Length: 577
Image (cartoon, rainbow, N blue to C red; front, side, top):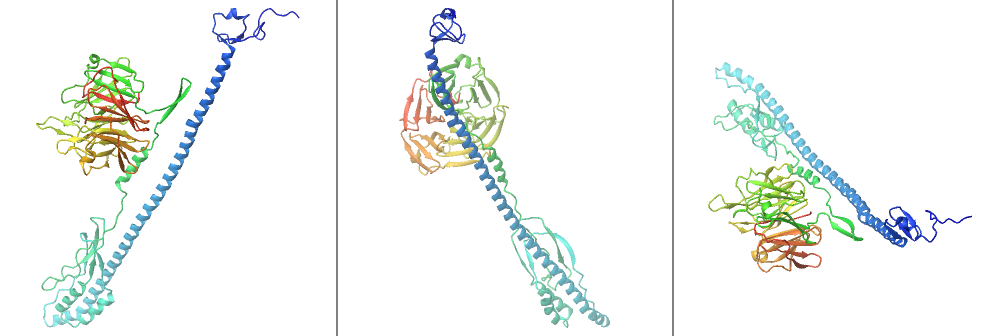
Protein backbone atom coordinates (compact mmCIF):
# COMPACT_ATOMS: atom_id res chain seq x y z
CA UNK A 1 0.00 0.00 0.00
CA UNK A 2 1.41 3.39 -1.03
CA UNK A 3 1.54 5.87 1.84
CA UNK A 4 -0.25 9.17 1.12
CA UNK A 5 1.95 12.26 0.95
CA UNK A 6 -1.03 14.64 1.35
CA UNK A 7 -2.83 15.42 4.65
CA UNK A 8 -6.52 14.65 4.85
CA UNK A 9 -9.10 15.70 7.43
CA UNK A 10 -8.82 12.39 9.25
CA UNK A 11 -5.18 11.58 8.52
CA UNK A 12 -2.18 13.90 8.84
CA UNK A 13 1.48 13.29 7.91
CA UNK A 14 2.66 14.51 11.33
CA UNK A 15 0.94 14.95 14.70
CA UNK A 16 -1.92 17.46 14.42
CA UNK A 17 -1.72 19.96 17.29
CA UNK A 18 -3.52 22.99 15.89
CA UNK A 19 -7.09 23.97 15.09
CA UNK A 20 -8.44 26.29 12.40
CA UNK A 21 -11.39 28.20 13.82
CA UNK A 22 -12.47 29.32 10.34
CA UNK A 23 -12.53 25.88 8.71
CA UNK A 24 -13.37 24.00 11.92
CA UNK A 25 -10.49 21.58 11.21
CA UNK A 26 -7.67 20.08 13.19
CA UNK A 27 -4.45 20.66 11.26
CA UNK A 28 -0.76 19.82 11.42
CA UNK A 29 2.30 21.80 10.36
CA UNK A 30 2.32 20.10 6.93
CA UNK A 31 -1.10 21.43 6.01
CA UNK A 32 -0.70 24.68 7.89
CA UNK A 33 0.08 26.61 4.69
CA UNK A 34 -3.51 26.30 3.46
CA UNK A 35 -4.71 27.98 6.69
CA UNK A 36 -1.99 30.57 7.17
CA UNK A 37 -4.46 33.46 6.73
CA UNK A 38 -7.01 31.86 9.05
CA UNK A 39 -7.30 32.08 12.80
CA UNK A 40 -5.36 29.07 14.08
CA UNK A 41 -4.97 28.13 17.72
CA UNK A 42 -3.21 25.32 19.56
CA UNK A 43 -5.35 22.34 20.52
CA UNK A 44 -4.18 22.80 24.10
CA UNK A 45 -6.02 26.12 24.11
CA UNK A 46 -9.16 24.27 23.12
CA UNK A 47 -8.81 22.10 26.20
CA UNK A 48 -8.44 25.18 28.33
CA UNK A 49 -11.44 26.82 26.63
CA UNK A 50 -13.44 23.62 27.02
CA UNK A 51 -12.59 23.56 30.69
CA UNK A 52 -13.66 27.22 31.07
CA UNK A 53 -16.94 26.62 29.23
CA UNK A 54 -17.65 23.56 31.35
CA UNK A 55 -17.01 25.56 34.50
CA UNK A 56 -19.22 28.37 33.21
CA UNK A 57 -21.97 25.86 32.44
CA UNK A 58 -21.72 24.47 35.95
CA UNK A 59 -21.83 27.98 37.41
CA UNK A 60 -24.85 28.82 35.30
CA UNK A 61 -26.53 25.67 36.52
CA UNK A 62 -25.59 26.54 40.08
CA UNK A 63 -26.91 30.08 39.71
CA UNK A 64 -30.12 28.93 38.08
CA UNK A 65 -30.64 26.29 40.74
CA UNK A 66 -29.84 28.52 43.72
CA UNK A 67 -31.14 31.88 42.51
CA UNK A 68 -33.87 30.99 40.04
CA UNK A 69 -35.24 27.51 40.61
CA UNK A 70 -34.97 27.58 44.40
CA UNK A 71 -36.36 31.10 44.54
CA UNK A 72 -39.20 30.10 42.21
CA UNK A 73 -40.06 27.02 44.28
CA UNK A 74 -39.95 29.04 47.49
CA UNK A 75 -42.14 31.80 46.07
CA UNK A 76 -44.68 29.30 44.70
CA UNK A 77 -44.85 27.73 48.17
CA UNK A 78 -45.07 31.18 49.77
CA UNK A 79 -47.88 32.29 47.45
CA UNK A 80 -49.77 29.03 48.00
CA UNK A 81 -49.41 29.32 51.77
CA UNK A 82 -50.22 33.04 51.75
CA UNK A 83 -53.44 32.66 49.80
CA UNK A 84 -54.44 29.53 51.72
CA UNK A 85 -54.13 31.50 54.95
CA UNK A 86 -55.87 34.46 53.35
CA UNK A 87 -58.67 32.18 52.16
CA UNK A 88 -59.04 30.72 55.67
CA UNK A 89 -59.07 34.17 57.25
CA UNK A 90 -61.63 35.42 54.76
CA UNK A 91 -63.80 32.34 55.34
CA UNK A 92 -63.64 32.71 59.13
CA UNK A 93 -64.39 36.43 58.81
CA UNK A 94 -67.33 35.66 56.51
CA UNK A 95 -68.73 33.15 59.04
CA UNK A 96 -68.17 35.62 61.90
CA UNK A 97 -69.94 38.48 60.10
CA UNK A 98 -72.85 36.29 59.04
CA UNK A 99 -73.18 34.94 62.59
CA UNK A 100 -73.22 38.48 63.98
CA UNK A 101 -75.72 39.57 61.33
CA UNK A 102 -77.96 36.56 62.11
CA UNK A 103 -77.79 37.35 65.83
CA UNK A 104 -79.06 40.89 65.22
CA UNK A 105 -81.70 39.57 62.86
CA UNK A 106 -82.94 37.14 65.55
CA UNK A 107 -83.04 39.98 68.07
CA UNK A 108 -85.05 42.09 65.63
CA UNK A 109 -87.40 39.19 64.91
CA UNK A 110 -87.92 38.64 68.63
CA UNK A 111 -88.64 42.33 69.15
CA UNK A 112 -91.02 42.33 66.22
CA UNK A 113 -92.83 39.26 67.54
CA UNK A 114 -93.09 40.78 71.02
CA UNK A 115 -94.43 44.09 69.77
CA UNK A 116 -96.82 42.40 67.39
CA UNK A 117 -98.10 40.17 70.18
CA UNK A 118 -98.59 43.18 72.45
CA UNK A 119 -100.43 45.03 69.70
CA UNK A 120 -102.70 42.03 69.12
CA UNK A 121 -103.41 41.86 72.87
CA UNK A 122 -104.06 45.58 72.86
CA UNK A 123 -106.47 45.31 69.96
CA UNK A 124 -108.28 42.28 71.48
CA UNK A 125 -108.50 43.93 74.88
CA UNK A 126 -109.89 47.20 73.56
CA UNK A 127 -112.40 45.33 71.43
CA UNK A 128 -113.59 43.49 74.57
CA UNK A 129 -113.63 46.69 76.63
CA UNK A 130 -115.65 48.66 74.06
CA UNK A 131 -118.04 45.76 73.59
CA UNK A 132 -118.42 45.35 77.38
CA UNK A 133 -118.96 49.05 77.74
CA UNK A 134 -121.62 49.13 75.04
CA UNK A 135 -123.44 46.23 76.72
CA UNK A 136 -123.23 47.91 80.13
CA UNK A 137 -124.33 51.28 78.75
CA UNK A 138 -127.50 50.09 76.98
CA UNK A 139 -129.79 49.87 80.09
CA UNK A 140 -128.56 53.28 81.28
CA UNK A 141 -129.39 54.83 77.91
CA UNK A 142 -132.94 53.51 78.15
CA UNK A 143 -133.31 54.88 81.70
CA UNK A 144 -131.91 58.25 80.62
CA UNK A 145 -134.41 58.44 77.78
CA UNK A 146 -137.23 57.67 80.19
CA UNK A 147 -136.06 60.32 82.68
CA UNK A 148 -135.18 62.83 79.88
CA UNK A 149 -131.58 62.84 81.01
CA UNK A 150 -129.13 63.93 78.25
CA UNK A 151 -127.51 60.88 76.85
CA UNK A 152 -123.80 60.44 77.39
CA UNK A 153 -122.05 60.18 74.00
CA UNK A 154 -121.10 56.57 73.34
CA UNK A 155 -117.46 55.66 72.90
CA UNK A 156 -116.66 55.57 69.22
CA UNK A 157 -114.88 52.37 68.24
CA UNK A 158 -111.16 52.94 68.20
CA UNK A 159 -109.86 54.15 64.83
CA UNK A 160 -106.73 52.60 63.41
CA UNK A 161 -104.36 55.20 62.02
CA UNK A 162 -100.81 55.14 60.70
CA UNK A 163 -98.34 57.56 62.18
CA UNK A 164 -94.59 58.26 61.85
CA UNK A 165 -92.64 56.93 64.80
CA UNK A 166 -90.56 59.19 66.97
CA UNK A 167 -89.91 57.61 70.39
CA UNK A 168 -88.46 54.05 70.52
CA UNK A 169 -90.86 51.99 72.69
CA UNK A 170 -92.36 48.55 73.30
CA UNK A 171 -95.87 48.36 74.74
CA UNK A 172 -96.36 46.22 77.86
CA UNK A 173 -100.00 45.90 78.85
CA UNK A 174 -101.87 43.90 81.47
CA UNK A 175 -103.80 40.81 80.48
CA UNK A 176 -107.50 41.14 79.63
CA UNK A 177 -108.53 39.20 82.76
CA UNK A 178 -106.69 41.58 85.13
CA UNK A 179 -108.10 44.65 83.43
CA UNK A 180 -111.66 43.26 83.42
CA UNK A 181 -111.32 42.50 87.13
CA UNK A 182 -110.61 46.18 87.59
CA UNK A 183 -113.58 47.14 85.45
CA UNK A 184 -116.27 44.84 86.88
CA UNK A 185 -116.69 46.76 90.17
CA UNK A 186 -117.25 49.92 88.15
CA UNK A 187 -120.45 48.81 86.49
CA UNK A 188 -122.91 50.37 88.97
CA UNK A 189 -121.10 53.69 88.96
CA UNK A 190 -122.34 56.74 87.02
CA UNK A 191 -121.07 56.99 83.41
CA UNK A 192 -118.68 59.91 84.03
CA UNK A 193 -117.01 58.18 86.97
CA UNK A 194 -116.75 55.04 84.87
CA UNK A 195 -114.88 56.93 82.15
CA UNK A 196 -112.45 58.41 84.67
CA UNK A 197 -111.69 55.02 86.20
CA UNK A 198 -111.30 53.41 82.75
CA UNK A 199 -108.88 56.09 81.58
CA UNK A 200 -106.85 55.77 84.78
CA UNK A 201 -106.52 51.98 84.41
CA UNK A 202 -105.52 52.09 80.75
CA UNK A 203 -103.00 54.85 81.39
CA UNK A 204 -101.02 52.35 83.49
CA UNK A 205 -100.04 50.49 80.25
CA UNK A 206 -96.25 51.07 80.25
CA UNK A 207 -94.14 51.91 77.19
CA UNK A 208 -90.54 50.66 77.55
CA UNK A 209 -87.87 51.96 75.17
CA UNK A 210 -85.40 49.77 73.33
CA UNK A 211 -82.39 50.66 71.20
CA UNK A 212 -82.89 50.82 67.45
CA UNK A 213 -81.28 51.87 64.21
CA UNK A 214 -84.04 52.62 61.72
CA UNK A 215 -85.92 55.80 60.94
CA UNK A 216 -89.29 56.80 59.55
CA UNK A 217 -90.86 53.46 60.44
CA UNK A 218 -94.67 53.62 60.73
CA UNK A 219 -97.02 51.27 62.55
CA UNK A 220 -100.80 51.29 63.17
CA UNK A 221 -101.78 52.48 66.64
CA UNK A 222 -105.13 52.67 68.33
CA UNK A 223 -106.42 56.08 69.35
CA UNK A 224 -109.63 57.66 70.47
CA UNK A 225 -109.60 61.39 70.88
CA UNK A 226 -113.26 61.45 71.92
CA UNK A 227 -112.66 59.79 75.30
CA UNK A 228 -111.42 62.41 77.75
CA UNK A 229 -112.11 63.32 81.32
CA UNK A 230 -113.23 66.78 82.37
CA UNK A 231 -109.64 68.05 82.52
CA UNK A 232 -108.58 66.27 79.26
CA UNK A 233 -105.60 64.83 81.12
CA UNK A 234 -106.12 61.08 80.69
CA UNK A 235 -105.79 59.23 77.39
CA UNK A 236 -106.71 55.62 76.93
CA UNK A 237 -103.54 55.04 74.88
CA UNK A 238 -100.66 57.22 73.94
CA UNK A 239 -100.93 58.31 70.33
CA UNK A 240 -97.35 57.45 69.34
CA UNK A 241 -95.41 54.22 69.43
CA UNK A 242 -92.05 53.54 67.75
CA UNK A 243 -90.89 50.25 66.31
CA UNK A 244 -87.17 50.34 65.51
CA UNK A 245 -84.66 47.66 64.64
CA UNK A 246 -80.92 47.13 64.89
CA UNK A 247 -79.70 47.17 61.28
CA UNK A 248 -76.14 46.24 60.31
CA UNK A 249 -74.37 47.25 57.10
CA UNK A 250 -70.92 46.24 55.97
CA UNK A 251 -68.43 48.93 56.92
CA UNK A 252 -67.70 51.22 53.96
CA UNK A 253 -63.99 50.90 54.69
CA UNK A 254 -64.28 47.19 53.92
CA UNK A 255 -63.86 48.20 50.29
CA UNK A 256 -60.25 49.01 51.18
CA UNK A 257 -59.69 45.26 51.16
CA UNK A 258 -59.81 45.44 47.36
CA UNK A 259 -57.05 48.02 47.38
CA UNK A 260 -55.03 45.87 49.77
CA UNK A 261 -55.45 42.86 47.49
CA UNK A 262 -54.36 44.93 44.49
CA UNK A 263 -51.26 45.94 46.43
CA UNK A 264 -50.10 42.31 46.60
CA UNK A 265 -47.36 42.28 44.04
CA UNK A 266 -43.79 41.21 43.42
CA UNK A 267 -40.73 43.20 44.38
CA UNK A 268 -37.96 43.00 41.81
CA UNK A 269 -34.93 42.17 43.88
CA UNK A 270 -31.87 41.27 41.84
CA UNK A 271 -30.44 39.74 38.73
CA UNK A 272 -27.26 37.72 38.25
CA UNK A 273 -24.66 38.01 35.53
CA UNK A 274 -21.09 37.03 34.74
CA UNK A 275 -18.48 39.72 34.42
CA UNK A 276 -14.87 38.78 33.73
CA UNK A 277 -15.87 35.19 34.39
CA UNK A 278 -17.00 36.20 37.89
CA UNK A 279 -20.56 35.80 39.13
CA UNK A 280 -22.10 39.06 40.32
CA UNK A 281 -25.52 39.76 41.78
CA UNK A 282 -27.08 43.17 41.51
CA UNK A 283 -30.31 44.70 42.77
CA UNK A 284 -32.63 45.37 39.87
CA UNK A 285 -34.20 48.41 41.51
CA UNK A 286 -30.99 49.84 42.88
CA UNK A 287 -30.54 53.58 42.44
CA UNK A 288 -27.02 53.89 41.11
CA UNK A 289 -27.58 56.82 38.74
CA UNK A 290 -27.81 60.41 39.82
CA UNK A 291 -29.47 62.98 37.51
CA UNK A 292 -28.94 66.70 37.93
CA UNK A 293 -30.50 69.62 36.11
CA UNK A 294 -29.71 73.28 36.65
CA UNK A 295 -29.43 76.48 34.69
CA UNK A 296 -25.66 76.41 35.28
CA UNK A 297 -24.96 72.70 34.93
CA UNK A 298 -27.44 71.66 32.21
CA UNK A 299 -28.58 68.01 32.41
CA UNK A 300 -26.00 65.48 33.58
CA UNK A 301 -26.09 61.83 34.63
CA UNK A 302 -23.52 60.13 36.87
CA UNK A 303 -23.12 56.49 37.85
CA UNK A 304 -22.36 56.92 41.52
CA UNK A 305 -20.56 53.55 41.70
CA UNK A 306 -18.34 53.77 38.62
CA UNK A 307 -18.32 57.61 38.46
CA UNK A 308 -19.08 57.40 34.75
CA UNK A 309 -20.47 60.76 33.60
CA UNK A 310 -22.66 61.68 30.68
CA UNK A 311 -23.61 65.22 29.62
CA UNK A 312 -27.15 64.83 28.31
CA UNK A 313 -27.75 68.52 27.60
CA UNK A 314 -25.34 71.42 27.84
CA UNK A 315 -26.54 74.50 29.77
CA UNK A 316 -27.38 76.18 26.46
CA UNK A 317 -29.29 73.14 25.17
CA UNK A 318 -31.06 72.59 28.50
CA UNK A 319 -32.25 76.21 28.61
CA UNK A 320 -34.57 75.73 25.60
CA UNK A 321 -38.11 75.17 26.90
CA UNK A 322 -36.90 74.24 30.38
CA UNK A 323 -38.41 75.01 33.82
CA UNK A 324 -37.68 78.50 35.10
CA UNK A 325 -35.14 79.28 37.82
CA UNK A 326 -36.34 82.40 39.64
CA UNK A 327 -35.98 83.28 43.33
CA UNK A 328 -39.29 81.52 43.95
CA UNK A 329 -38.54 78.34 42.01
CA UNK A 330 -36.61 75.39 43.32
CA UNK A 331 -36.63 71.72 42.40
CA UNK A 332 -34.25 70.25 44.97
CA UNK A 333 -37.09 68.43 46.81
CA UNK A 334 -38.43 66.73 43.69
CA UNK A 335 -37.57 63.07 43.02
CA UNK A 336 -39.11 62.12 39.69
CA UNK A 337 -36.46 60.24 37.70
CA UNK A 338 -36.79 56.66 36.48
CA UNK A 339 -35.93 54.70 33.35
CA UNK A 340 -34.00 57.64 31.88
CA UNK A 341 -36.96 59.98 32.26
CA UNK A 342 -36.96 63.29 34.12
CA UNK A 343 -40.19 65.02 35.14
CA UNK A 344 -40.16 68.41 36.85
CA UNK A 345 -43.26 70.07 38.29
CA UNK A 346 -43.52 73.86 38.17
CA UNK A 347 -46.27 76.02 39.63
CA UNK A 348 -48.21 76.23 36.36
CA UNK A 349 -46.59 73.59 34.11
CA UNK A 350 -44.96 70.19 34.11
CA UNK A 351 -41.80 69.41 32.10
CA UNK A 352 -40.61 66.04 30.74
CA UNK A 353 -37.24 65.04 29.32
CA UNK A 354 -36.56 61.65 27.72
CA UNK A 355 -32.82 61.17 28.29
CA UNK A 356 -32.74 57.94 26.28
CA UNK A 357 -33.12 59.83 23.02
CA UNK A 358 -30.12 60.96 21.02
CA UNK A 359 -31.30 64.57 21.05
CA UNK A 360 -33.57 65.05 24.10
CA UNK A 361 -35.91 68.06 24.17
CA UNK A 362 -38.14 69.37 26.94
CA UNK A 363 -41.87 68.76 26.59
CA UNK A 364 -44.32 70.64 28.76
CA UNK A 365 -48.02 70.91 29.56
CA UNK A 366 -50.34 72.86 31.88
CA UNK A 367 -50.85 72.34 35.62
CA UNK A 368 -54.34 73.88 35.71
CA UNK A 369 -55.61 72.73 39.12
CA UNK A 370 -52.78 74.32 41.12
CA UNK A 371 -55.07 77.21 42.01
CA UNK A 372 -52.85 78.37 44.91
CA UNK A 373 -49.86 78.56 42.55
CA UNK A 374 -47.70 76.53 44.90
CA UNK A 375 -43.98 76.42 44.16
CA UNK A 376 -41.10 74.65 45.84
CA UNK A 377 -43.13 71.47 45.94
CA UNK A 378 -41.87 68.14 47.20
CA UNK A 379 -42.60 65.27 44.82
CA UNK A 380 -41.78 61.62 44.22
CA UNK A 381 -42.36 59.01 41.51
CA UNK A 382 -43.98 55.72 42.54
CA UNK A 383 -42.15 53.67 39.91
CA UNK A 384 -45.42 52.87 38.15
CA UNK A 385 -47.77 55.46 36.71
CA UNK A 386 -47.84 58.41 39.08
CA UNK A 387 -45.88 61.27 40.54
CA UNK A 388 -47.22 62.65 43.82
CA UNK A 389 -46.77 66.40 44.34
CA UNK A 390 -46.92 67.36 48.02
CA UNK A 391 -47.30 70.79 49.65
CA UNK A 392 -45.28 73.78 48.53
CA UNK A 393 -45.11 77.52 49.03
CA UNK A 394 -47.18 80.34 47.55
CA UNK A 395 -45.97 83.92 47.42
CA UNK A 396 -49.20 85.27 45.94
CA UNK A 397 -50.15 86.95 49.22
CA UNK A 398 -48.17 89.59 51.12
CA UNK A 399 -46.93 87.18 53.78
CA UNK A 400 -47.00 84.03 51.68
CA UNK A 401 -48.23 80.65 52.92
CA UNK A 402 -47.51 76.93 52.78
CA UNK A 403 -49.85 74.64 50.90
CA UNK A 404 -51.51 71.39 51.96
CA UNK A 405 -52.60 69.98 48.60
CA UNK A 406 -51.43 66.59 47.39
CA UNK A 407 -51.71 66.16 43.61
CA UNK A 408 -51.32 62.96 41.60
CA UNK A 409 -49.79 63.30 38.13
CA UNK A 410 -50.24 60.44 35.65
CA UNK A 411 -47.06 60.19 33.57
CA UNK A 412 -48.94 58.53 30.69
CA UNK A 413 -52.02 60.76 30.37
CA UNK A 414 -50.22 63.84 31.77
CA UNK A 415 -53.27 64.67 33.89
CA UNK A 416 -53.33 66.04 37.44
CA UNK A 417 -55.89 65.34 40.14
CA UNK A 418 -56.19 66.52 43.73
CA UNK A 419 -56.25 63.44 45.98
CA UNK A 420 -55.66 64.58 49.58
CA UNK A 421 -54.68 67.33 52.00
CA UNK A 422 -51.67 67.31 54.32
CA UNK A 423 -52.46 67.22 58.07
CA UNK A 424 -50.34 70.39 58.35
CA UNK A 425 -49.75 72.77 55.43
CA UNK A 426 -46.02 72.62 54.79
CA UNK A 427 -43.12 72.43 52.34
CA UNK A 428 -39.51 71.15 52.00
CA UNK A 429 -40.29 67.55 52.96
CA UNK A 430 -38.02 64.57 52.73
CA UNK A 431 -39.85 61.88 50.71
CA UNK A 432 -39.29 58.18 50.16
CA UNK A 433 -41.59 55.76 48.35
CA UNK A 434 -41.95 52.05 48.99
CA UNK A 435 -44.77 49.54 48.47
CA UNK A 436 -47.69 51.97 47.99
CA UNK A 437 -46.51 54.22 50.82
CA UNK A 438 -44.88 57.63 50.71
CA UNK A 439 -42.89 58.32 53.87
CA UNK A 440 -43.00 62.06 54.56
CA UNK A 441 -40.13 63.29 56.74
CA UNK A 442 -40.59 66.61 58.52
CA UNK A 443 -41.69 69.74 56.69
CA UNK A 444 -41.91 73.44 57.48
CA UNK A 445 -44.50 76.19 57.78
CA UNK A 446 -44.44 79.66 59.33
CA UNK A 447 -46.94 78.84 62.08
CA UNK A 448 -45.41 75.65 63.50
CA UNK A 449 -41.96 76.10 61.96
CA UNK A 450 -40.30 72.71 61.48
CA UNK A 451 -42.60 69.70 61.78
CA UNK A 452 -40.87 67.14 63.93
CA UNK A 453 -42.76 64.08 62.68
CA UNK A 454 -42.82 61.30 60.08
CA UNK A 455 -46.09 60.41 58.32
CA UNK A 456 -47.00 57.61 55.96
CA UNK A 457 -49.29 58.36 53.01
CA UNK A 458 -51.08 55.40 51.40
CA UNK A 459 -51.15 55.99 47.64
CA UNK A 460 -54.08 53.57 47.19
CA UNK A 461 -56.47 54.80 49.90
CA UNK A 462 -55.06 58.36 50.16
CA UNK A 463 -55.06 58.00 53.95
CA UNK A 464 -52.36 59.11 56.42
CA UNK A 465 -50.69 57.09 59.15
CA UNK A 466 -48.54 58.59 61.88
CA UNK A 467 -45.23 56.71 61.77
CA UNK A 468 -43.39 58.81 64.35
CA UNK A 469 -45.54 61.44 66.11
CA UNK A 470 -44.31 64.88 67.06
CA UNK A 471 -41.53 64.41 69.57
CA UNK A 472 -42.21 65.45 73.16
CA UNK A 473 -39.00 67.44 73.21
CA UNK A 474 -37.68 69.05 70.09
CA UNK A 475 -34.22 68.82 71.54
CA UNK A 476 -34.44 65.02 71.38
CA UNK A 477 -34.84 64.77 67.62
CA UNK A 478 -34.35 68.45 66.94
CA UNK A 479 -36.31 68.64 63.69
CA UNK A 480 -36.33 66.12 60.89
CA UNK A 481 -34.79 67.18 57.59
CA UNK A 482 -34.74 64.11 55.37
CA UNK A 483 -34.82 60.35 55.50
CA UNK A 484 -35.43 57.06 53.72
CA UNK A 485 -36.54 53.50 54.45
CA UNK A 486 -34.41 50.35 54.37
CA UNK A 487 -37.28 48.08 53.38
CA UNK A 488 -35.17 44.94 53.73
CA UNK A 489 -34.97 45.47 57.50
CA UNK A 490 -38.07 47.70 57.96
CA UNK A 491 -35.99 50.54 59.38
CA UNK A 492 -36.18 54.29 58.83
CA UNK A 493 -33.00 56.36 58.59
CA UNK A 494 -33.27 60.11 59.00
CA UNK A 495 -31.14 63.10 59.87
CA UNK A 496 -32.07 66.09 62.02
CA UNK A 497 -30.92 69.68 61.96
CA UNK A 498 -28.67 69.31 64.98
CA UNK A 499 -27.36 67.39 62.99
CA UNK A 500 -27.96 63.87 64.33
CA UNK A 501 -28.34 60.71 62.26
CA UNK A 502 -30.96 58.22 63.50
CA UNK A 503 -32.21 54.73 62.76
CA UNK A 504 -35.81 53.92 63.75
CA UNK A 505 -36.81 50.25 63.86
CA UNK A 506 -40.49 50.05 62.90
CA UNK A 507 -40.74 46.51 64.30
CA UNK A 508 -39.57 47.33 67.83
CA UNK A 509 -40.57 51.04 67.74
CA UNK A 510 -37.14 52.04 69.01
CA UNK A 511 -34.56 54.52 67.74
CA UNK A 512 -30.80 54.67 67.97
CA UNK A 513 -28.22 57.36 67.21
CA UNK A 514 -25.63 56.65 64.51
CA UNK A 515 -22.47 58.47 63.39
CA UNK A 516 -23.19 61.73 61.56
CA UNK A 517 -21.26 62.71 58.40
CA UNK A 518 -21.74 66.47 58.62
CA UNK A 519 -21.03 69.03 61.31
CA UNK A 520 -23.37 71.85 60.36
CA UNK A 521 -27.11 71.84 59.72
CA UNK A 522 -28.26 72.12 56.14
CA UNK A 523 -31.20 70.94 54.10
CA UNK A 524 -30.69 67.61 52.41
CA UNK A 525 -32.32 64.58 50.84
CA UNK A 526 -31.58 60.94 51.42
CA UNK A 527 -31.77 57.81 49.23
CA UNK A 528 -31.60 54.10 49.88
CA UNK A 529 -29.96 52.34 46.92
CA UNK A 530 -31.88 49.07 47.37
CA UNK A 531 -28.79 47.18 48.53
CA UNK A 532 -26.87 48.34 51.59
CA UNK A 533 -26.00 51.98 50.95
CA UNK A 534 -27.68 55.26 51.89
CA UNK A 535 -26.74 58.44 50.01
CA UNK A 536 -27.03 61.88 51.56
CA UNK A 537 -27.26 64.79 49.10
CA UNK A 538 -26.84 68.26 50.61
CA UNK A 539 -28.63 71.31 49.29
CA UNK A 540 -25.50 73.23 48.46
CA UNK A 541 -23.10 73.95 45.63
CA UNK A 542 -20.80 71.17 46.83
CA UNK A 543 -19.93 68.69 44.14
CA UNK A 544 -20.11 65.63 46.42
CA UNK A 545 -22.37 63.05 48.05
CA UNK A 546 -22.03 61.28 51.41
CA UNK A 547 -22.52 57.49 51.44
CA UNK A 548 -23.44 55.40 54.52
CA UNK A 549 -22.74 51.66 54.53
CA UNK A 550 -25.51 49.91 56.48
CA UNK A 551 -23.44 46.74 56.92
CA UNK A 552 -20.43 48.24 58.65
CA UNK A 553 -21.98 51.52 59.88
CA UNK A 554 -19.45 53.85 58.26
CA UNK A 555 -19.65 56.97 56.09
CA UNK A 556 -17.50 57.91 53.12
CA UNK A 557 -17.40 61.03 50.97
CA UNK A 558 -17.82 60.70 47.20
CA UNK A 559 -16.36 64.00 46.00
CA UNK A 560 -15.92 65.60 42.59
CA UNK A 561 -18.94 63.71 41.40
CA UNK A 562 -20.23 66.06 38.71
CA UNK A 563 -18.24 67.74 36.00
CA UNK A 564 -19.60 71.17 36.93
CA UNK A 565 -20.65 72.99 40.08
CA UNK A 566 -24.43 73.38 40.45
CA UNK A 567 -26.86 75.64 42.28
CA UNK A 568 -28.75 75.13 45.55
CA UNK A 569 -32.11 74.90 43.74
CA UNK A 570 -30.98 72.33 41.15
CA UNK A 571 -33.05 69.25 40.47
CA UNK A 572 -31.13 66.21 41.82
CA UNK A 573 -32.62 62.73 41.84
CA UNK A 574 -31.44 59.13 41.94
CA UNK A 575 -32.69 56.62 39.39
CA UNK A 576 -32.31 52.95 38.51
CA UNK A 577 -30.82 53.70 35.04
